[in-house]
Structures are given as C-alpha cells and as structure tokens.
Length: 542
Image (cartoon, rainbow, N blue to C red; front, top):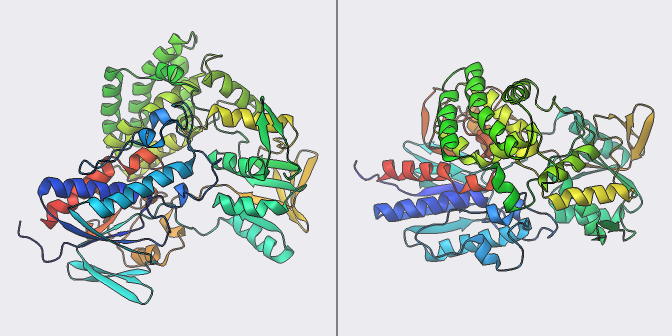
C-alpha cells in the first residue's frame, strides 16, 4: 500500500485506556520501523491517570482489585517496572491499593513514554475538543478558538463522560436549587470530603449501594478523622449523625476472596477455559436464547466442580437453575438483607463458610473476564444477543467486581456504631421536602438534609453532555446498538449510519458497551482492544 500523505494521529481523552492505546501504538510502530506523530487533547492535569485515578484523590479511596492481580501490559520498548515493583513494600499482595497510587504510577508511565519513545512524537494540548471536521480523507479538530490537523486517524477515549441526569436526579437537582438543599456528586472524592466538613451531625443519604458508595462512606467517616481500631469504629465527632445508603435491591456487593490461597480455589482448568472461549464465540454470533444455552453449559460444570471442593452439596441441576434465573432476573435468587449479605460475603471470602452458587459463579466469571473479552469483542454481535450477554455480565458484577473484605468489615463496624443505617436501603419511597429528602420504608422514615449521587450513569451516547459526541451522532458518524453503546468494529472504528466503518474515526471504552463487553476493567485498558486499534491504524497508514 502506498504511503499516505498524512500519518498524524489525534487522541481525544487519555486516562488509562488512552495510555494503553498509546503504548500499544508505540510497540506496533517499533515493530514496523515507523515513526508516528500523535497529538493528545485532554484538559485533565494528570492525563495519564485520568479522573478515576487522580493522584490528588484521598488515599482511602481504594481499587477493587488486590495487588496480586494487577498486571498491566507494559510497552516493550520502554523499561518500566510493574506496578507491584514500583510500589515496593508499601502494601501486601492481598491488599487493595489506593487508586491515587495507581494514578501516580500511570502518570509516570505517560511521562516516560513522552520522553523516551523513539517511535512516537507526542504533543499534549490541554484543550476541550468541541467538534471534528472532515476534509476528504483527513480530519480536523476544533478546540476553542483553535483548529488542529489534518489527522489521518482520530481516536476518542471518552471514559465516563458527563451525561444528562435521569428523571429522578433531574427532579432532585431542581429541588435542591429551589430549596437550598445539598445534592452532591460522589466524585471527585477530595471535593466531597471538603464539602462534608459542613455536614457534621446531619443525616446524609447515598443514592446507590455499589462500589462507589464504599468510597463515599469512607470519605464521610475516615475522611473526617474517624478511625478503625480492633474492628470497631472510633468516631471523631465530625461525621454525619447518620449515613443512609439505598438502592433498588438494597444490597451491597460481595467481597472478593480475602487471600490468594482462597482465591486460587476458584481457578478454572485450562480445558474449562477452552470450552468457555468456544462458548463465548458461539454465543456472540447467534440468538440471545442460544447465547444463554452456550454460556450456561460452559459455566455449570466448572461451578459444580469448584463448589464440590468446598464441600457444597449443590447439584449440577441446581447450578443450572440458578443460572437460568440469573439470565431472566439478576439477583432474584437472593432475599438477604444488607447486613446478611455483608456477613455471608465476608464468611465466604475468608473461607469460613462454603461459597453459595452465586458466589462461585461470580468468582469464576471474574477469572474469565479476559477470555470473555477476547472472544466477544472481535465479533459483530447481533444487538439482542449483545444486550443479553452484557446484561448477564453486568448483573454478575455484584460478585465479580466486589470490594475488599476490609471494606465490608468496616461497613459492619459503622453499622454497629450507629453511624450507617441500612434500614432504608431497599427501594425506599423518597419525597423531596423543604428540609431535604424524606426516605420511608413501611412506617419508618428519615429526613436527609444531604443527598449524594453515587450511581454510575449507563453508557448511552444519546445522553452524553458533549458537543463532540452530539455532533458525531447528528452527522451520522456515531450510531448505537439498540439500548446499548456506540456501534464499533473490532478495531474500534465507529460504524456510521450507512452501516460501514467511518475511516479515520475510532472510539474505545465503556461508551461502546455492547460492541465490547466488560469495559470497566483496568486490565482491559491495556489489553487486546488497544492492540487491535493500533495494529489496524498502522496497517492502513503505512
């Protein structure tokens, strides 16, 4: 193929996923013996870390992955230590590192790549991109009063962009504005921690009871000077009087296995993983019903084998029945209270109690996240099938994306201390009132003067508050799978409204959910999707 007139590439948004793509590009360019110019547009002060891993965030906001499992692909051309080696002996292999520590590491990797990569010439523009203009086979970037380009390829890495609020949140925002109430966002956690200085003695409600709620609860307690000593919480006196998390089902996520020795007992065999890969490949090309059958078949036998090693008596048919109910109504198999979920989860995670079927399924599914992505992401999955498989994966996150055992123990200690209450955790009736929000379950109510939103919005491009994304949709360059994210090809190229890939325009990450799966993983940022994009771009540029 003849060399193209322009080989410049723009990356809009960086963070871990953009960094992973940039590193993959460096490796591919080295292998091809070419040099590539890359302009990065990211307004964030620490673009390599991004907002989720901002080095300025509080140290009590933790990853949901233990150190022993963090293995991020590193560029072959650069000599950079693995994360665990970079950390030194600051934490143990079973501990969950602070997200800010990982952010420092990623930012240093980005700095070294900029300075030392011989195959990339990198410029960073701290500008907000507002629109893209096509000019024949190339693109221009409009950022404020500046225009940059031409570019042969533009990669967008939007991460978790701001979205229009759902109806409930929109109503609450209007209520807070009209009545002077306090409606706060969970992140940035450092800003929430500063705001919480004014909430001592008040009742604070948390919308959402998933991983983000654990960060919020730490900010409201440890972040206000409280301490955990000997399994008990010692208050500082600056905390809210009561913290009330709530969600539709009222259940927190289950903790991950406490140690590597316990975790390895959930390991699949190589043969089981091979069967699973084939099942995902078949599931991704057929109907939703066929996908359920393929994946249930691949899961049932390994789960039964794993449970048997713990002495669990559940039969193969019981596992299949649990999986069947999970496909149709995730979580319907469980009717435990929030406290029971915490207690049972800790007992299973510490190996004190044998795992339930759900816990066994969730841990095996966690270990198969890479094979799942590797088999699913390169496939053009029918929309209904994509919705079914993505829904199954999202439902299992209550097990597979769980917090550390220590966080669950801390939450129980806060409940014992009377600072956190789960009495209104399960789908309370919520009424905006002059003094805040009244939460009611049966005949019991509590008035929260502060409401914190800890719900991660779904990755729906039409709801994104971005002139760039809105413009791409209006121009027909960004289409979506029904009720899912952006439609992309296996190498990340956007699929336009003519059903064909848009040359020179790609998108990676969570906003393409449906075209890709399990995109919330840190490891995925440095995985095969980034490599496919880099190989694809250089194959048609040179």
